[in-house]
Image (cartoon, rainbow, N blue to C red; front, side, top):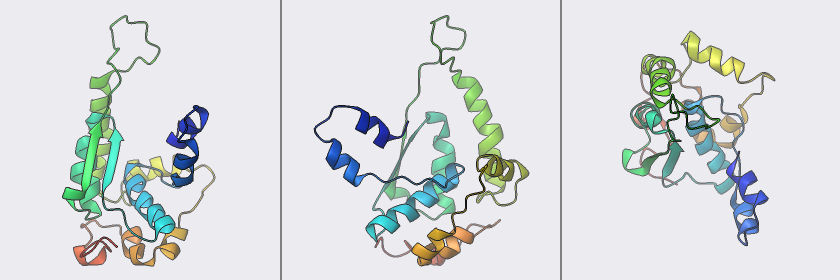
Length: 178
């Protein structure tokens, strides 16, 4: 459930304020694109880059975000915060939970299906596994090219496919965060 949907469904006096300040990025097909496209979407709306990025996700994804994705886009580490949040591990507990969340299995899957592929292919452009995920998560073949038009100073980063990490001089937050 998106935060905006959750907030709109609750009786909260701040609903109108939060709703007016909430925008969604709807083109990302994986975690790398979530960060990259969210920065572009933020820039589209505010005409500036965020001062800080906070990612809230399962704690086993911390390594991927902090050591692979943020460095791949040259995001300053002092302006990146990862908050890990996990449901209770219900594997084999007989707790009656319907989630059946198995933390250890999820962490193994993270390493095999995300960390290792992104270590070899930081931008997700060459790995068959990562490309297949992107294709499967985009059944209507929607495109994100608009970000290169609305954020032209991000165009090189949006199109960068490595395998080397993009030079610091080619990202717009190189010297300032405007």
